[in-house]
Every structure is written in structure tokens, then in C-alpha cells.
Length: 444
Image (cartoon, rainbow, N blue to C red; front, side, top):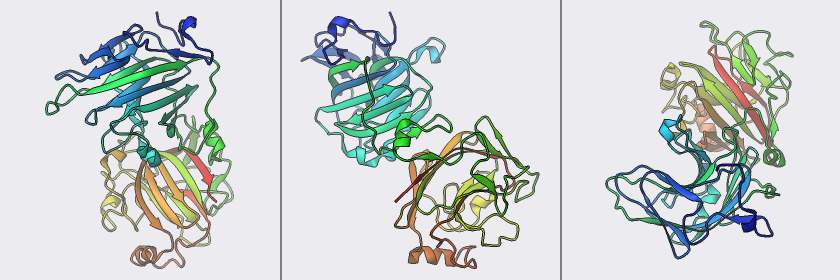
């Protein structure tokens, strides 16, 4: 029998909690995937690694949709493991391979315990690079406590009471829960163990924990979750109209070169015209300190950029607006990536000023959606992010910044980058590039 939220009423306590493990045997569970050993000892489920097998999963017999899950675990420091939630195994998907959301158990130096991985599907959805403060919550060699809330499209995790991840996603709304024993490589010794105890679930009369400032990764296009709204985040583009945007040096939105379709704002290729058919877009308002999020999708060989502190008092002689630029570029196929100094014109760099860090896992292939983020703090500190990884940071107006401007293409622009506020700009460089999920939070 499989049903969303099924449980025997007689085992539910007054607070609505239902034990998923009876402390005696594995009734209510079955194994999928690999051949790791699962057994019961000292009122604990013990998972043990074995050689030459795939990832193993001890799976609940029932499926669950909305729930709060709590459990304790103790893991060997050399292992990797996780808790599958809203997961599935179907004959039509990779011959029954277990797939779905996984709350990571990571005792390694990477320290991503509590992050959210998409097993056998999309990979990392919420690495703890989004929330570094939570990386210290896991206790090595001790019992740890997890809390997982799945309510609607929201998935939130806590490690020993510390908020770790906050994900909004609509791909899978129901599925089983599973305890993973990860496969080991040939050079790893088998026999390492992870132990679970006090596994309980609540499926009725559940409410989200109070919202906090944990960064939210939201995979629903142009959507604001309740937690994002609590944090003061707003949509900079509504996903439907031209409201809040216009052509640079103009009063209206461009009549050509840009289109809005199914929640996507797209620049159209201009057949070799470098500045594009429509020209740059700028926000109606100017901004000083803020956290800007945006998703972008490149086509092969494409060039664009997200600029900030843009001032229309500069005369760009018909070229792109002048401002600090988060470079949006196909590094492999556009020649601009090889120009400038030390890679300071590559994707996510501060264009012509500061190169990005070399973090290969930060990049997604051409044609996929990437998530960019620019944070300008009130004290002038600025950071560029890409898909959850900090790519660079600098101090606006510092001696180091001014020295970089002095040797850049902006050296003859008076007070370049020193404005206290300015417009946000999407650059039309004559190539097809799409944007969505433009969000803004004013920082004070």
C-alpha cells in the first residue's frame, strides 16, 4: 500500500507525531538500490558499507506529501550519506533507480550537512555555500538531530537546531523517505557505519516554523515564497509586463529587439549589430545598497551583462550604458573572454576590472538556466555570486578599486563606479540571451 501521509492512527501521539521506526525491526521499510547492510541494534537502524555495490536505500513502505520529519543520526567521519524525502523509484526512470530530494549528511571537510541534493536527477539544489554559517552545526563523531519541513513547494532543513537550507521547488510533491548508505570507492574500506534513531513524522496540522533570514533558493520562475516576502524581497520584474523597465535614455520600453513570453524576457539576435536592435534596458528607479538575483540563459557565443550603478548622465555615444558590470558571456565561444587582463571579462567577473574565482562546479552548460547574484552592502562591499558560489568580492571606492579603474577601459569616465546609487541594466549586445527571476532586496 502506498499513500500520501498514511499512518496507523494508534501509533500517533497527542502532538501528532508518528514513529517511523519501532526500535525492534525494519517493519514498514524495504531496501532498494545497492546491497549495503541494514540491521537493528540497540534500538537503532545501522547501515554498513559493503564493497562493489551502488548507493543503497532503506525506504519507507508509505509515501508522504506534506510533513515534518525529525531524526537523530551518528555517522562515521569517512562516510557520505543522506535522507531521501519525496523520492521515487519507478520502472520508467533509469530502471527503477531511486531519485528525488536528499537532505545531505556530509562529515567531510566540505561540511554541507543539511544541504539539499537531487539524487539521480539535477544534482545540487542547495549547497551550503548559500548558507556558510550552517556549516558549523554538524557535530563530528556525535549524535546529530535533523528537522525537515516539507509544506507545499517549500523544503526547509535544520541541523541541531540551526537553519540550514530553504528550497522552493515544484518538481515532486510526494514520495517515500529513505535512509541512504552511499556507495564506496575501491580504495575505501568497507564496514563503516551510520546509525539512525528516534525517527518520527508528523503529517497533520503542520505549520511552517517562523520565517528567518536563511537564503531561499526558489526554482519556481518569477515567484516569491512566503519566506522571501518575509525577508523583504520583491520582484524587480513581474514576469509578464514591461512595468518598471524602459530603454536606456528613453521613456518607453523598446519596440523591437526584446520580447516577453511565458515568463521569460529575451534579447533577440541582431545579425551582427553589436549594440542590438532594442538597446539596453534599465530600471525606472535607482538603487544604492541591495541584493539582486537574476536567472539567465545563454545561447552559444552570446554576450550580455547585468550592470549596476548605471548613470544616464554619461554619454556612451550610442553604445551600452556605463556602469559596473557582472559579465554574462559564453566564455568558450565569445572572443571577449580572452581579452582584458587575467580573465576579467569572463562570466561573472566584474567586467574589465576583476576576474572571477576558478570554481568549475559553479558553471552550467549553455542553454541551461544559471543563477546570478550581486550583493552591494551599505559599507561599499560588493560580491558576485554564480549558482551558489561566491565568484569575487571587492570594496567599491577603495584604493585598490580605484587603481583597477585607472588601468581599465573606464579610466577616462569621471567618477566611474563611485555613484552612491544608480540604475540596474540588462545589456543588449546583439546576441540572444534570456532573463527571468529578477528579484531585489534593499539593504540598510
